[in-house]
Amino acid sequence: MKFLHKNKIQKKHKSIRKKIKGNLNRPRLYVFRSHQHIYAQIINDENHNVITSSSTLEPIVRNQNFGCSTCKAAEIVGKILADKCKKQNINKVVFDRGGRPYHGRIKALAESARENGLIF
Image (cartoon, rainbow, N blue to C red; front, side, top):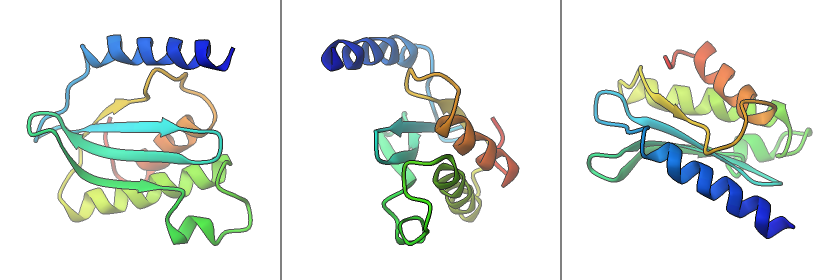
């Protein structure tokens, strides 16, 4: 059952990626969610490189008392990512939620990034 669900999400993300492209002016904000962690990357699809990234594996998030798989941890990851983007003069991004619904941890990360200066 787990394999079928994962395969369904991968197919959905593949079809979405045909439409969503990031460039140097508007890179792509890709969010990957696992059971225990959440990862966010700013990607330039023209050069196929990661500009900056943030995740719940960073010491700032891991040392908190609420764990890494909560909405609060996702909010902190969004804030850290927005701060890293400001340092590199990135204001506008294209949001790629990876075929997942806009709910829970993904929504918390996105709203936190918006509150801290990213536009999408």
